[in-house]
Amino acid sequence: MRYLGWILKGVLFILLLGFAIKNSDVVTLSYYLGYEWQAPLVLILLMFFVAGAVVGVAACMGYLFRQRRELARLRKDAEARQIALPDEMSPN
Image 1: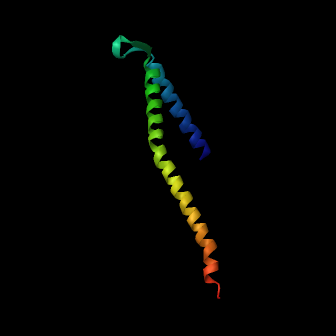
Image 2: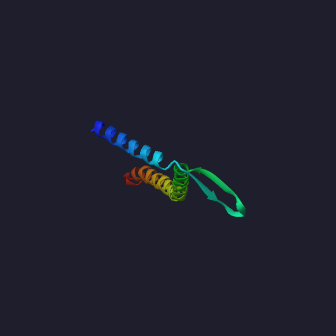
Image 3: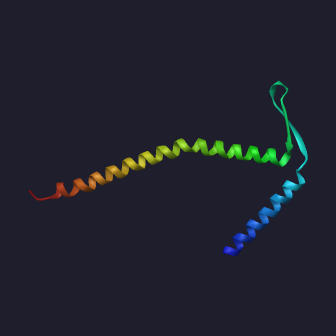
């Protein structure tokens, strides 16, 4: 199974390398106010892919932190109930 993973990674690397070689033409990216930037197409695609991934992760961070706070609260409640349970059940 480990060898299959390495083979798949190698094939993916070869495919991406071929894509990068085929799309190495310089393109012009035009901004507002007449600003322009020239770079290889594969570099621009990579930058926008990374920017999209960063925005996606940042969008999920609020949900993740909210879940962590709720989990900590629930653990604290469970510990409090576990400690309080033997005291309540003691025969007095």
